[in-house]
Image (tube, rainbow, N blue to C red):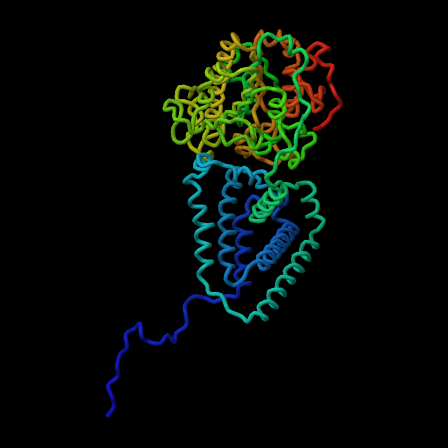
Length: 570
């Protein structure tokens, strides 16, 4: 007799059917992925690379095709060299997500992702990061990030014996490099012209720009291990005239944020963005050029003796700053910060981080208004003994949330953009919000001058305000800042510089204010800051260069006896 058939539970049946998931070679997956990234995630690059070319010309299609095949081959070779069957999907996932995020910001704000820009990104604090994460980017991230990643993880990868896998991988890498070079050679004249005349285009090629910028920053950090900074102005001392001065000096140096010179009414802007400063006895220098287009570059540079003229990032970051020279000469130095720190400028010196102060009227949502920098100044001035230099680092007009940089009472220009996604506002609304933030800076600086006027009972007082860089407000399709310096528009490089000197300070330090006012239109830059502060405060050192001291023409000759040839640091 035949035994009745026994039905096994579905879970116990042998699985003879094939998986419905497709099976690919790892190399095929890499090639598909890099092709997708170049086509879908590099709109800014293709627009820049093909600018001025007509699509009705066969040469345009040939050039575009050659670039696409060449860069696909190079990307393939790079990933194939690093990836194994087990690591290829995680590595491609990282590249896809990096491309999705980078392409959104580059396309949305017309930014270039170079080494300096990526360093800005890495230095961004939590509050700044929140303002850059907007709902408008979600569809882009889903389409170019989440969906491709899901598809990336769907197929299975074929297994191969190790020896065969290594041989095929090496052959594919060599083949890719040969194809990439061959395609570039076909259009080499056009490609060389593009790279020679528009070198900035390379900062638009994603994710290569991210990888190169990360590696460059990592290499730069490795070359600068944690070690003491190299001394600048080791011979610094107070000039002989200090022995005859009746009072110590209180000098406040305000580092503005993202203020552009052309929007200061002190410099001729039609709107009254500086109504209070206009009533103070200030001097506004209207032609000042920043050392960089981002805080990460400008802040260390402007406090350095090397400046833009001798720009060397490694040298600037490895040497002491103006503040260390002043401290060595006997000044008490204090850095008060309402932003993301001093970028090494105040290393080893007293600092106060004010952006998380518990002052209900001034602080909300994890950030404080700039008036917080004035809090406690009466006590600092009262308790200090001797000469005092205070640096105040503003939040200023930091974008894109300009409307969060001022209290509601300063919403004078309206309607103002109240959206972190600037593309969601009109040009007029963006400018209104930005000008309101400058109006608040005017109020802050005027209040500081009032305080310094009261402090004259004890000190000879002075204030110098200068912004770190400017800002693009949609001009020519550009937003925010950080465009590579050689191609950056003037609005990102031209910054305001405003000075106030008390009558007592002018007398004590022999400064001719009328002379300074007559020189307000002179061409200056951040390179002048180091030497001008040393000069006006009568600090003698071989690191001082009188040719870069903006006060020098307006002080009597005896005070300039120590002018030396340009010496970077001794």
